[in-house]
Structure formats: C-alpha cells, structure tokens
Amino acid sequence: MRDEDWRALTVAEVATLTPEQERQRLKALARLRQQARRRRELRIDYYPSRQAAKVIRMVLEESGAGASYTNILDMIIEHWVIASGINNRE
Image 1 (cartoon, one colour):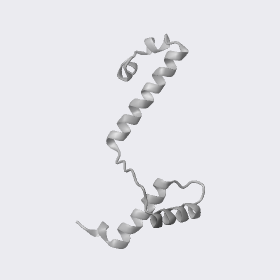
Image 2 (image 1 turned 135 degrees about the vertical axis):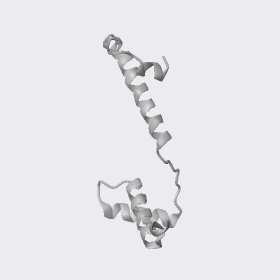
Image 3 (image 1 turned 180 degrees about the vertical axis):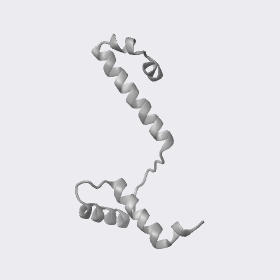
Image 4 (image 1 turned 90 degrees about the vertical axis):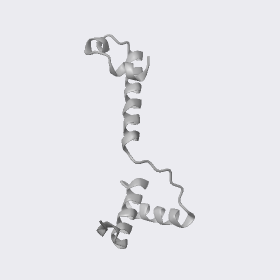
C-alpha cells in the first residue's frame, strides 16, 4: 500500500487493521509528515571549517544540555545579523 493510501483510510477501516498493519500505517504517516516538513522548511547541509567548528563546539559547551547545533547556528547568525546591521536594511 502506498503511503497516501494509509492516510485515506476511514476510522472504520483503521479499526480493523492488524497490529502489523497499524505499525505500517504509523510509519507511512510519519514519512508523509516528514516529507511535508522538508518541503516547507529551509534545510542546509553544513560542514564548518575547523575554526567555525571550534567556535560552535565552544558555544555548545557553554550553552548547556538543551542546546543543539541548530540552536547554536541560529544564535550565531542572529548575533551576526544584529552586529552587521543587516536587519535594518529594507
């Protein structure tokens, strides 16, 4: 069954699924959500230079357990935007 077909099932049809079919349905729905998220979100593959990686690791260590690479890169970019004045451009 295609992923889109799992989404089209009625409540009555879902109620009759075997446990294996339900696992397949949930995986298919997760794939569809992920595909939709990737279509609407900006995604960048980024391999930092040695110097940039050093800064990112330093900030990550200082930021604590809840920080992620995405959070750190967002913070660095936001600070750069403010410092450069780029946020005041029209």
